[in-house]
Length: 324
Length: 161
Image 1 (cartoon, rainbow over the protein chains, first blue to last red):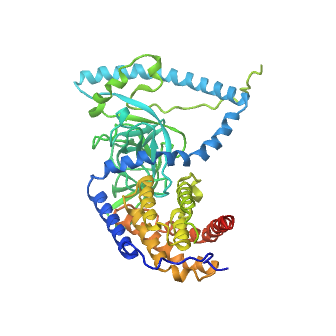
Image 2: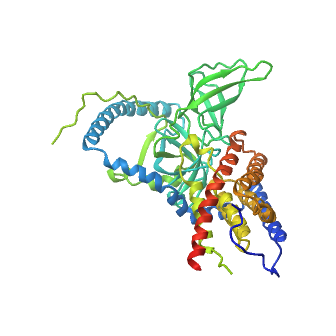
Image 3: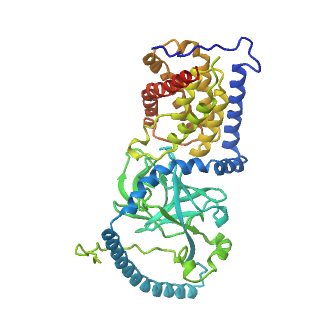
């Protein structure tokens, strides 16, 4: 079988610029784009306009996933009832914890006032939904359904229920793109919770681990140490859990020891994340949070800087749903 | 003279873009073929009257925006690969299908190399070995895409006659 299936020829007298010239001019345009995009932020507006125009493509590409999700709607009534009961139990436990927590927080505030410290423990957060995941396996980015209209800003921190997820790198009108902490381009200032040692955690790029490359050879760090975010750099709110150390490498002849850690946030599970407004930007967010009442409480929650780690007791196996 | 299949051309390119963006499990995401260059190369071989060069630029820019890579990275690689394919078209179309599968391998290699190189210049590290997997998968998918689109074109031609 020949690859040439049908007869056709090039026109005898081609019009317009030749193939080489056309290709060359397109290549030059690409080169200029690469140069300007790499060196300057001038093309950001063009990119966000194009991203808005291409959002239907992302929507269509996410359809198959939604179709498989549709199977979830067919959950049996039993399962739903069981889940409902489990969630009720868990909420009850968390509320009990929160009561104690509020008392502690008030006490902490009073003590800080005594110390004349202006540190604000309250941070504003907004629940957002993850609408897309970058399909390039070497870029760990997610698209969120909140954008400039919700006062999201570039560099804003993104957390989930168990730790820091990443930060916003691009804001479009109704969506925004976040870089996860496991991306090789990402670095986050961290503090070892046990000792208070400050260092930097870089993404490894395999989607799982973080790397702490600049540890002094005699640093006090152990397997299982919790890394929490540090306020150095002013980008991330302090005190959120970031990762847990699972391996420490002492390379003979090297100046620094290296540690590897797994992020505590569930980066590739779940659909929701929390955007955190840091103190410099809380003024912008005031208007969002100023609406009190149960209706607003669904999307806006005020919460203390350190998140309590929910300890969940498994639902009793005997939690059988009541049949009608 | 046969009519130029403009509609099929653009539709198949959008289908390729969709296949490039559709969510895959992590384990096989690294093996995803380079759908857009694959389909572009088919049309470049099939019909020189189609605006394949312009289309490769446009779809390259779309890939850049969707993947959030440096603007122009995919576009540059697409345009260069399609230029090579068009330039060597008179050679490629003489090959039988299995030989053209092998003969197009260097084109996918150039594409993967340009991705790797521009990412390297932009200091974006990535796993250097997994990056070359799409070259193999694209070559394996070439006969499939070729037979699929070619049979469609033959049927179309028959219905026109």
